Amino acid sequence: MLKQEKFNVAKTRGKNFTVDLKTKRAEKLTKRTTIANMTIATVFARDQVKLKLNRGQPTKTFDSGRIIGLDPSKPGEPPKKVTGQLQRSIIQRVVVKSKNVFGLIGSTVDKAKFLEFGTTRMAARPFLRPTLQEERPKLRRILARGFRGV
Image 1 (tube, rainbow, N blue to C red):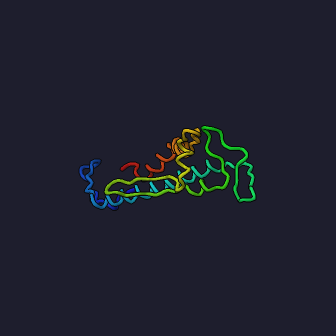
Image 2 (image 1 turned 45 degrees about the horizontal axis):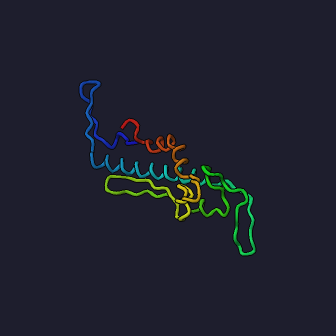
Image 3 (image 1 turned 45 degrees about the vertical axis):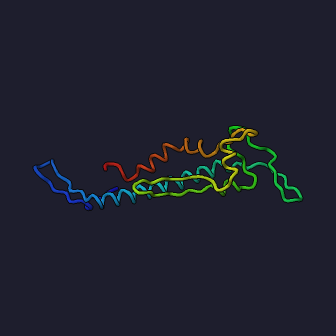
């Protein structure tokens, strides 16, 4: 939250007052707060996605080292964990471009897009979009921290 001592406040005529806002300083504090809140929100969202991908299943390992799941996820469910590669690949990043702050959450493995959206041969097993939709109220509260009363 912006602190009152950062501004020059002068009382006039009892209840009325004027605020001499230092625009550059306020913009800098607002941007810093926005970046900090976006970082907290994206880390929270990343961790929630990883939790959703933490459903294990029995596996079978072949002599060649290949591992398969014996109880795969059903269409529409988040994918079940076999090796944990997808879960470990979930990343977050905050990008600042001019006056805009963006929070990015995604995966570094190619199979993530096929699982999220499906293919012509496989129904989707979304994990990212449903998690973000479920956590939307919490993410909004995190992003609004420090801006109450401003």
